[in-house]
Length: 513
Image (cartoon, rainbow, N blue to C red):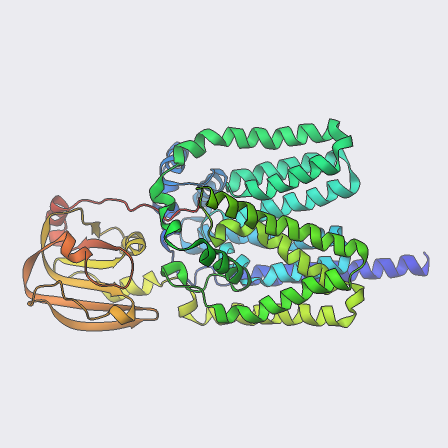
């Protein structure tokens, strides 16, 4: 063995240890706190409406209750049979795919610009707050990121090797990405067009790959057309497109930090990582080799292209632009920065910047676990504070809190349909600035308790004698949110009577397009 061969084996061993260590870090950040946060509304849709029944019922529910393809729900249904539908059990499926994305970063980075870029990208994917957030959610986003990253890897391999086997693997991973989330179309579409131009002389191998992807997309069209429901995505257009694009940039570097309950993301946390990532991209473009600079431009086109195409679709009337739908852009954009951080032209500066970014993200990841205001609303704590009903009562909250509250109250609460109901208690879950403003309640209802629950406040009103209250009166109580849900509850002895006068009506899921 020559000295060069020995050096290569030594580097290979160190790289393997590095990838395994970073993957272990990524797994720890995802699995260690799976049960820390309670389910939020979209996850409750998965748990309550989609996967509880038989396999056939699950497929029917995907058609009627969802606006995404079926792959995640098929896997989640089977996963729940083995591990249950609790937070840790069901979310572990997403955490598994989120962890599997981490070593894919090495393969992508190495294909782009060598092993140094691969290690840097592995580290960034391991600790990125946005990827960790959706690796801990019982929805399809972790699958979307994984299969889009796998598609990206084989796309790069096909460009470099021009082999039919790599094109076939690109087609397979792209088809799985499309079956995970419809927004994979933008990433896969850009790659397909690029391959069509770059490998046009390899048409015998290219056409079957493109035909496979196209056939998958066409096969999903009947499901997509049956899922079109304006109540699933109408909420998206209520905020300006420019605001949502800004939120995408912020959440890509710090994750979801607030607007899951109609609050904007915490922009101030994003300044440092945005500056560091911008420096990485500039290093690749300015100090990188000619090949490295080309690869930076390629990944920027892939990442920004997803956002641009989604924006164009929004401008022509198909507006589904929201940060989690744009997740296919995250890995290519992280790869662009990783190339710059790893370039030899930057010497030690690039690595120092990469370490600074990773350190910031790890610190922020830990900070989120210790800061309830940066987490999903704590519906477990809320229902504990509510406790069992001692009198007929209504719980008033923002619309998307209705289903989680009912889940954690173990279905004893019934959604109020209309008419009026004799109630002795009204509990209002609101933003702190709206707490205590109960102008619509009769004078007999007195504020007897106010409990601060991080970003929320629970205000309890009690009347000495049950009073008839109309649904519209309760729904109009000030919570600080756009629209409210009203839930009925009562002591066990009165639940049958309550159920005869009210009925459960499902709210429209906050789906993702």
